[in-house]
Amino acid sequence: MDLIATPDSPRSNNSGGSSPNSSPRHLSASSSAAATGAGAASSASPPSLSRYESQKRRDWNTFGQYLRNHRPPLSLSQCSSAHVLEFLRYLDQFGKTKIHTHVCPFFGHPNPPSPCPCPLRQAWGSLDALIGRLRAAYEENGGKPESNPFGTRAIRLYLREVREVQSKARGISYEKKKRKKPQQNQHHPPPPPAAA
Image 1 (tube, helix red, strand yellow):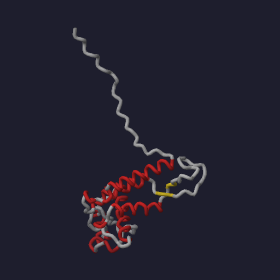
Image 2: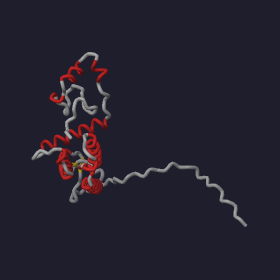
Image 3: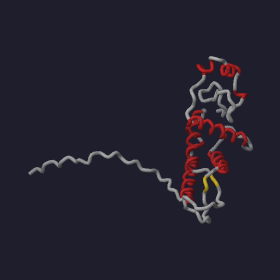
Image 4: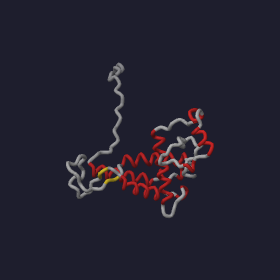
């Protein structure tokens, strides 16, 4: 269960360009030659990834980097939901969503009229989507569904708590919108004739 995508994998980026997630040490000589060959590059290149797949790979690589930088470094098999929670809290420092504290005069106001010193955090929707992508990536990279640390009860409870806190602090409802059922003709059949 390595975290590093191999160049021959259908989910790897063989563009040969420099991206934050590509590294020359991951390219084999044959793939480098194929990428620089005149006619071979157009016929041998894998189809481009969807936006979702690209984001999922970036998220997976970011989580893998987090595990490698952890003290002590962790392998994927050692990772638990506690490490995932630690990762989510670590990501908060890069958030861009203002979450008002209880003492802030703008607590519960969706559009405050002026700036305040409240902290910036990751938005609940971003965390929820991130966990969904990491949960899928874990299984795609050899993890067993029953041991997936991204799908545990602790993670679901954490996300629910973040949603509730942010909903109150920002004055925004995160209620699921109910789908309207398609309107059918309101013609009711006549009642059956009464038996005498």
